[in-house]
Length: 472
Image 1: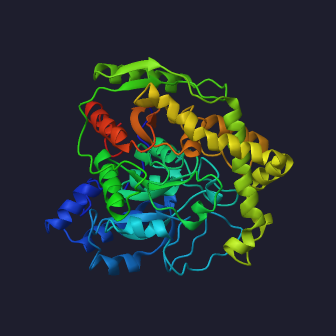
Image 2: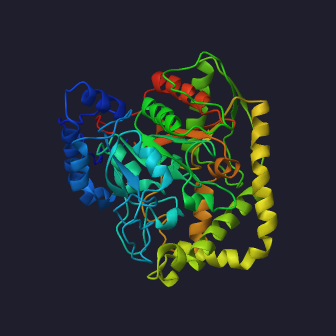
């Protein structure tokens, strides 16, 4: 393992090293005030922002005002942050793009109201790559978000800003959303828990609803399973989809031994790297040792799935770039978007005649995905096909074809859950030879987040993940 290069903000203050559940309990018991913990989060953010660059927009003064009388909820008074692709009234929503100048949002997005019903206090907005398209929070003409485990490496994306801040101890938990892996990928890169919910589990924003295939799920990144479980239960109390089985509050491991399908290689045909393969074998051995039945499985989709998802990715860029002035205001200039956004748009224009067939095949993915769970309770795979890359490897400043090939290879395991709508959770069960987090990815049938959370509790207890504040 290399020398300790961690950049974190953990210190002896009102936040300590507690998760959101622990902080909320201290506030409720009167041991600390909400203002004290919000002030601590602000000071921590200021201490690491110059290196990690996780904060897009500060809202410190309003956060301190709100901390005087925070909303009631499971995380009442706990500081957090919202990703800069959702509307929080009074703050601009920039979507990670330099192509327009955003005005302050007049009202909260629907999901933001659901998120804030937990009682958490946002200190601002976190950074993301342009329109959330990339798997690394990097920019053509701005400093990247850096990984607190080693600032030479990517923090993942598109919720990279949120993940970096939570991993570094600035905040106990943060908002994230996931259109191709963007909760799970930064959770994997930064050593966090990242649960992508079933489609329809949380309230959808207007932009999400406008998609022909609703690939985006809203959620959080956390340092503990119990925080993810408590957020899920709290969100369900605000809104429960009657078409899905309830999750309810999951407070520990389940007793049922599970049938687990193990998938090591993705549909791209590019083999998973050696460190990740070894980690997956270790995951399988751990599950087997806990009494679960593990056997090799195969994904129910082939290379055509990634071609279709890539084209849908291009379709979304085409829609944003052509409708930018209507969506983002008169200052929008498509020529000022980055190389990835423009490249995806150009790629889609070349193949747009395939759109009806692509949409039909992606819509079928939900049924194909569900058939896996006639045989298995859970399917485990790597979250990513190789270990976290250094900054620059996925930079939008490079040649588009090279970047796209690298992105598709890297994120090949996560998009099937977005297209199908199935839930999945990334858990940082392992570390690389250089001390970076390395995650396993668990999928379940539609509506079965409860099984994922029960298993996550069991694995967290059996193999507690590394903490950034511990010595290497």
